[in-house]
Length: 137
Image (tube, rainbow, N blue to C red; front, side):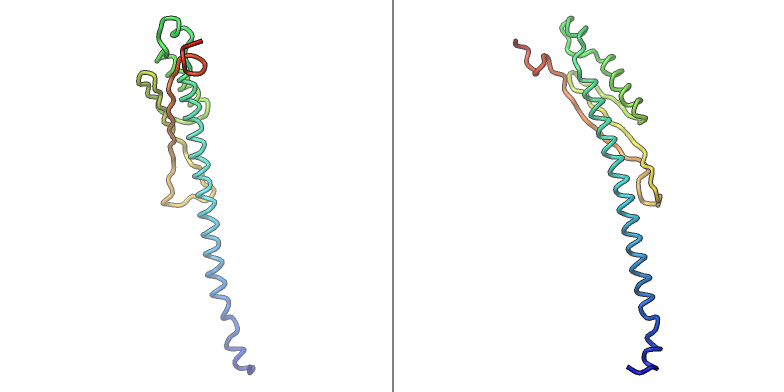
């Protein structure tokens, strides 16, 4: 290789390196944002599940009167779990089935357009009589 040839090639790796570093930084940014979104969704599902389980607990006073669930008390238990977690949500009680939906905001370290600002999670539970779900002793 002559000296003239090596001077012409000098710096030819720099543009390729710059492009590679940019792509690596974009990939890291995407992974961080996706993991933050996944964590927020997981938390929303966990809160919804806890609220649904709390609402589906049989009320001792209602059991004495022959009912399985007191809808007002179940609603209050589920809303207490949701508000204690700091999220917003809704509770739907249909007979012995309880469905809870929770919305959670996503706080990105590197916010960008295109990523959702909030995610949601939902869970259901069914009220059952007795400890194992059967009335018999």
